[in-house]
Length: 65
Image (cartoon, rainbow, N blue to C red; front, side):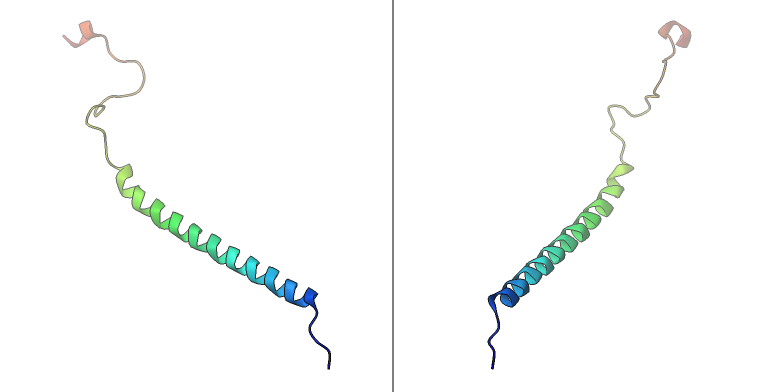
């Protein structure tokens, strides 16, 4: 009866390492999606220091009086 060669064992180790790396990447991807979804609620928040400021040319002070 023949014994398993080292090549087959090394191949199995490489495939297992690939599988672990793929699972880790999927977990990171899922975590980033969850974090991104949580940040969307903050996107509607407006800074009180710049509230009401309109980008572009501003009216002259003399025109407002």
